[in-house]
Amino acid sequence: MAYEPFSVKISEQELSDLEERLRRTRLAPDFSNDNWDYGTNGGYLSELLDYWVNDFDWRVQESKINSFSHYKASINGNPIHFVHEKGKGPNPTPLILSHGWPWTFWDWHKVIKPLTDPESFGGNPLDSFDVIVPSLPG
Image 1 (cartoon, rainbow, N blue to C red):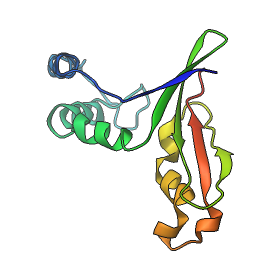
Image 2: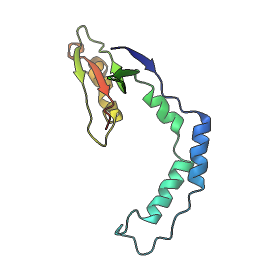
Image 3: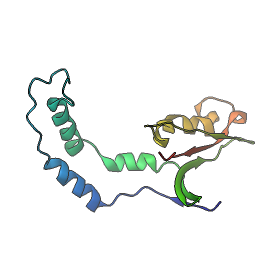
Image 4: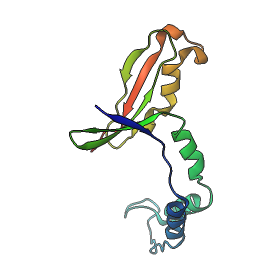
């Protein structure tokens, strides 16, 4: 199986386009929906839009994502993304962490480094793993 490394890099043009579209969002009036009986509460949605436009920093998230080693492979013609972090111990054990729907590889981001480098987290380097986290399609 051939694979190649890559980094997540969203262009400024795409980020600007998203911000512009979020700023142009027009919310419908939200009558008597404080309990979310009729779908998403308008006040909440308005706060969410404000957060995405004014507070969320994609570049910070992109940097966190790119702190891991990402790869792309093709399996039976299907593109597959995966993270592969090699263990730092003398004989790391291979470990695959998989996610279910609707989660992603990112749901494992807090455990990858402790598994690959347990010594840095107060553990024994003999307990290290080579961690592979595929992004499961579907």
